[in-house]
Length: 278
Ligand SMILES: [Zn+2]
View (spheres, rainbow, N blue to C red):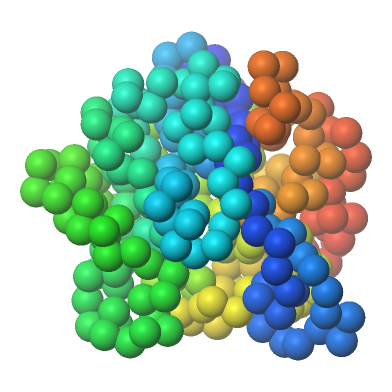
């Protein structure tokens, strides 16, 4: 049995969204192409001993430059549930895309947990190519290079426990160094898949997200996220607005979802559990 200090509550803090054609969310054209909502979240892992933030979102400048709607700065979202970004000591970056790694200066005390492969990808030869660098922002990347020079980047190569009950798992696919996070919670292990799957339907419809560094790895990730010990109703996609239908709201904040809380309805992965867990 894990100790209580190794068990955490997990929250998804919504801070922005984007309405766009579903063509932007699925690699194969959809005959019923229509508007599709993408939600932007940062995540919080919390117990009496520690707070870990997973991904840090983007700020007003990136929202304006890329035509995304910011409902609030991610830091204000964290503040709404009592998390002071200025005091956070551990930030796990699932990957370095602009919408996951854009507010490093708001976390002056943090150590950033990044896969080595992601830093290599974001600073290496692939960034010569416009389609490869499109989801990255050079200022976010250089901020992390600067953080490394200040000994504030914790590199992982593969899978590693980051704190008791919290581990990261390299999956690649969408970005070369994308990692998922597994957390021990009162309802059992929970997996923050982040962009290993943006939407429930990328997996359910077998129609992956179109921004991809390695399609085979991405599809292998669709299997891996169900092999990390979580039940299929506690595997959480990175950008799906429907997450808010299945888990309760935080008592202090309408835009935050309590992922380790009671289930309000059966999430799509659980409806397809036999197929996914085989
Ligand atoms: Zn991404």
